Amino acid sequence: MKATQKDCWYFMVLMILLSLIEDVFLKQPDSIVKLEESITLECVCPWSGNLSMISWVQMPGKKHIAAFHPEFGVAISMKDYDGRLKFLRSSLMDGSITISNTTANDTGLYQCSVQTFPKGSWTKDISVEESVRLDWSTPIPEVVEKGNTFILKCNYEHNGSVYRVTFEKVREKSINTMALCNKMEGSVLAVDYRERVMVNCSDILGVGLRLMNVTEEDRGIYRCHFSTRTGVQTTTVSLTVPGKADSAVHLSYEIYMYIYIGAGISGLVLIIMVITMICWHRRKKRRAKARPKLHPMQRRLLNNYEQAALYDRMKKHNKQEESEVYANIPSVPRRTKKT
Image (tube, rainbow, N blue to C red):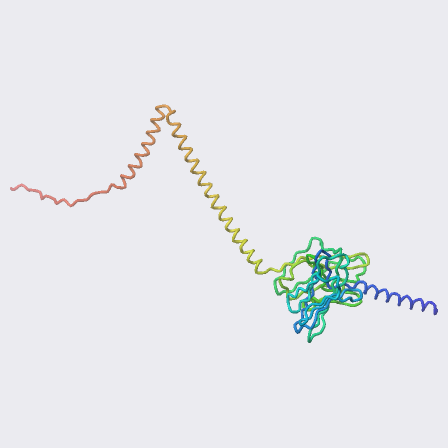
């Protein structure tokens, strides 16, 4: 009996350890970047406040690569990155860097840490990989007006137990993780989307992500992955956010369409008129050529017909000019015979 209880206890402990190990290995970085000759690692803190310092480290071991201080400037710790690493500094809280002349040694996990006051530290994990699946199947189109909410839903076909749901945004050279739903941890929001994203992992089979206050920069390709024991099921959505440029393009397209339609109708009318004039001119020319070949009697009849037509027109014109003339003529009294 005790041996059976001990075996059950060992089995439970083993299952718990396996679940914890699984969750550790399944933990994803905030962004995945494909290794190319020159790469950009984005790190923009969404907070406002005073910047104390920006630091970059490489995993494992947290090897210090570089740091930026508002007063002392840039300091590169590893000689291997000297001359290849550059801070972009496009805004006050921008800690993004570019690495040029990359090699396979540049792959791995990087961590950006932005120290601010008074809110504290903000971190982001970025993985640089040689092979990144940036292609996608035919996406489902969806249009959301600026300022509204975009809902990304996953289509799941029951094919095994689900242990994780991942929401991603696919860019040209990188993949950004928006949110995770783990069966052990619940919802985990990525650092770039914590201010505008909501996800409820209570029903992991019917989970959906809500991206609030959509902007024009949010347009692009979004993916949702259902990770199961038997594989991954993916739903891809293409988000379009109409902007002023799109409205102007659409308006100009309508204007050009009306112009083309009007030009087409005018051209068609002109062609019909030209064809009519050509036919009338050819008919007149054929009559002129055929007149000398006619029999004298036919020519006389034709002349009589034309003269009769001319006479009828003249007669009609003269009738309109004719009018009755009235005159006052004094009457002469009759002379009577005197008796």
